[in-house]
Length: 168
Image 1: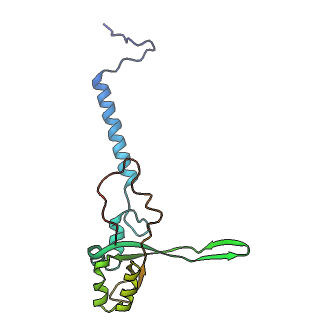
Image 2 (image 1 turned 90 degrees about the vertical axis):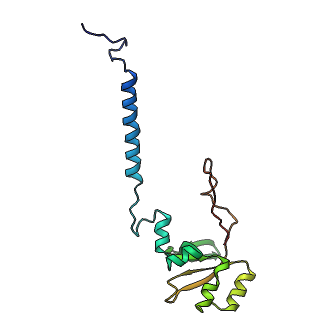
């Protein structure tokens, strides 16, 4: 005896077991697809995670313990007034480190900054950042934390969770 379909177009009805299996295969396929497409290759050409930036920082252990690793961008801006135009050079990216204000003594102990530099930087409520290893000839600058525009990556709809302190 042949069982006939109740559907009018000739396609047999799907029972709950078949639907569950198809749903599981679909979800598994999505998961595998996401895993393959978001897999980051950890090489210098692809800076895709904080861990890569942390490992690339000068003096990475010291930087992570006493500050934060950073990406430093060097570029110049040329402004002409007649006619008014703005020209920007190609940026050069390199690893760097930003120290918390209460850890400046590390630089002073190594005689990399003077008490005069510390006083000037402290008066402007800034902090120090550097590129290059501290044992070599690092480039150390008093840097200003610019919060004027805010961070558009944070506080987007649905992105909640504890925030790490961002005051240095």
